[in-house]
Image (cartoon, rainbow, N blue to C red; front, side, top):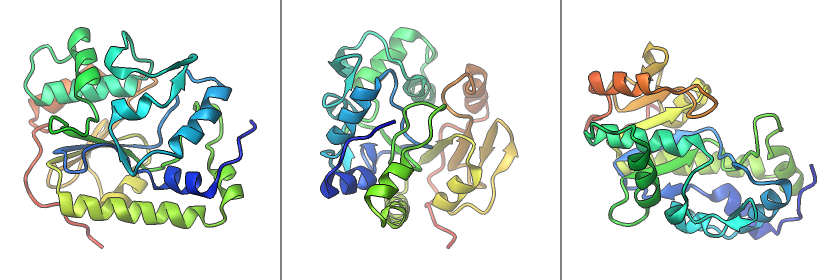
Length: 247
């Protein structure tokens, strides 16, 4: 795959991007890296440049208005359907956490994505971030990290500094609930300062219930049965105990 040339400022902004929503939100979602949906190669390349203009934290809807998919800018507030299942599962989790009986109803899920998910306004109750700030087009392709390494020899150190920044934000903001999704258990442990996960797969948690580790929110790994279990076990309410790094 060929990539566009990127100015150093754009590289630094892409690598320094923290996520969507409010850092002070009560619920944080942490994934592996951002997917690029149905974007073709040309759109993915152009969107790298657009991401090079992102602020450190962006409103999900506002950010996607600068990105293209299938030839059009992404208008989340007006979309009839969403290609990424990740947003669907986040919305279902948040609706279930709020006590909605119809948390899995399609109209409610889409409405939450359009109006609430990853918003920077006072209504924003989620912050969406990733272990890696560098997006991936699809699972069958290599991650773009080698491209960024070729452009900037200090890229790994900058990614490490971003992780430290996220750790500091977690320590100071103290979200009520942190939901990780994906298979990289150890990397999530490193970021969150958790000695080990406890419980039984597919639901793992930290000892104070504040951090949950769930399956990846896509490719059929996540299920509504898991959300029902989270509700029945009271795990979506979170705990108000302070977030503290162990090292």
